[in-house]
Image (cartoon, rainbow, N blue to C red):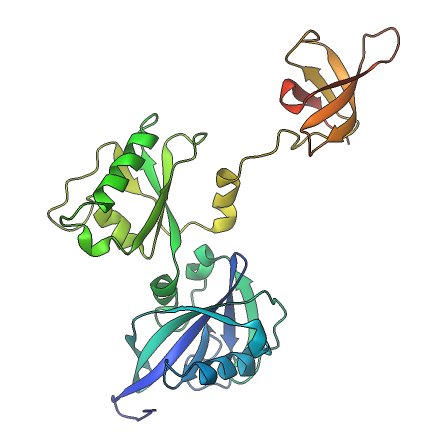
Length: 296
């Protein structure tokens, strides 16, 4: 291990710990010499190849036991200034199912955050957001011409499969998503925004600007904002017992009814027609009713 003063490179690492869709950020104590009170990953001095020492450091800082931790990957080191030292900091990604954290050593607090919100921590250790991208990824939103979403996505996939000027970023772009119900936008998963900008020909040279794609929206997109667009909603979503609905299909089209039962697994609802002389339970597909009045 090298840890010298006066501008000599020091070996260090920053661990990013994921649990589900969140990443753990630790807040440095006010008494720490470097970046007191700043947000951080899990920082340690030492050889990034010494897995046992790294796991011990995570446990020391978070209270999460070693058998609850699993390493995913290691990124390339970055030379970062910590006080009067230049540290060669290697980002490392771990995953866990644990969410309970007991801050220790350097840290006084913690927060599980959406990766797309790391940049919102204005006071943070150097390149906290960028190093996370070195071992994980972010979602970026591309603005496209309406009706051209699939064509843009197809062209992006073709560019990524080629051998030309974009070959150097092929391992930095992980996928393109074009939900059929979204108009004017598509998603690209990548390690950093500048790779996406190069992909569509908005930075660099030798890349033709991508037709029908005007720009990358600013910043990384929080997963919590994007996932609802990627996960199709159940037909019963928003329908509750007691709701007033209008039937939009079948023999009773246009009839008003009250919902008496919701079968989510079958995506069906049971209703009673208002205009029936004798109350009759009628089971219809959930996508054939429209809620006109919700339960208060």
